[in-house]
Picture 1 (cartoon, helix red, strand yellow):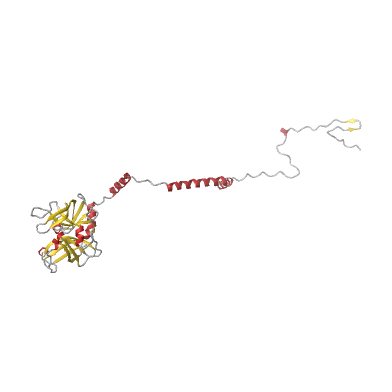
Picture 2 (picture 1 turned 30 degrees about the vertical axis):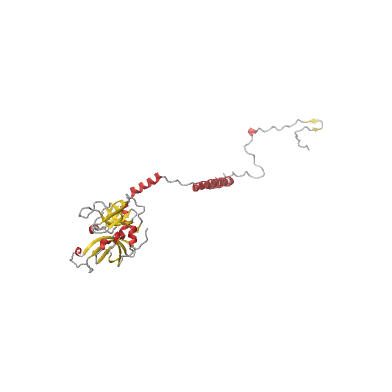
Length: 329
């Protein structure tokens, strides 16, 4: 039986016979199949599904995870600069107001609201302390209905409350000879008053009301040592029984003397040009801060009418306080 021939890539010597070398031709890569043939290891695997696209939140999370250290460093630097800026703002000196700033603020305030005049402010300050005084010839009760009150009164003047217990300063000539003194307070409360003391050399009298209104407000008084001619003053009273009335003017002079037609010579008087007439006697002469510096006492009129022509006189408050037993200013 013949054996199947054997082939080899090398030469073999079988006996004396030499067989030609059999060469296996090389495979051309261009003709190779795109995919390897199936092997005995198993079937071809199925195609792989594409990867899922991450969401924006996932991308941010991944970004912050990858750059955590640089981001914390940037936050720390930002906080340092912010703190430094706040410290500079807190320690920076405030802007200094200039006179121009103040003037502009005042102008804007005046445009929005018109302020009362100095005279109006002085009047508002003194008004609660001003009283009307009527001296009567008899001590009977008030006139009966139908009677003329002028038939029973001999004088009408003004006073100013200086103590909240009802102590009132006025002129002596307002109440001199009166059997009954009646006072009317700013709120309308009426009361009889007693004569407490007099100072004839200064034409002053001190009264004490028998009853007073609630929360009676005494006047503020100040010394006359710093007064000079030209200072503004306000005279408040009941001229001819009308009032309370206010008149404004200035101090015309100091340390004046005056002799009334039927009275003593008065000295150390304040001369002023605020209008004053009969009935103003005993009323306060007030500065623009609402303080009493004198008691209106007399007017100068060479004629016989007894009306104001531009010169009035007031007793300094130092004298008036002494008449009330108060310490000098």
